[in-house]
Length: 147
Image 1 (tube, one colour):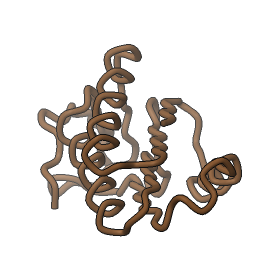
Image 2: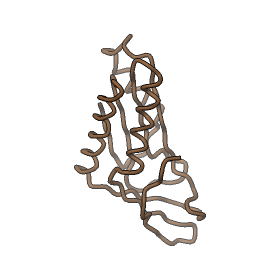
Image 3: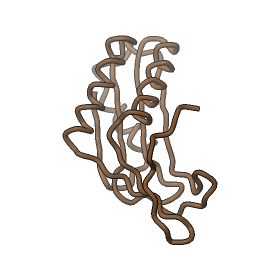
């Protein structure tokens, strides 16, 4: 299990490819990889958004993400998990999050990836401030419910 939280932009497919190359010890063991990439959109709550700023408390956030991944590993028999999450200033079309899981079977992979992402999106301790097209800032009061 690897969790990376950073303020640098990242290319999710390159990160995923590099990570999987380092998994030679699991060759032949996994039959499914499920991947989710979340990207910043340029609208929210009916307004145009030009930038988002994500804040977090590093220790609290990392512990929460580790807990989510450990629960999913036990429930879905995951062989490996990767979570990469941005913090700081993020522009529209930039990736915010990458969640990838490897397991023996596709059903477990899909369900685990979704469960990790839903918990991360609705419960993980990230605070979001949006900058609107008109220059105003606003804090998002609640995390997004799953759709």
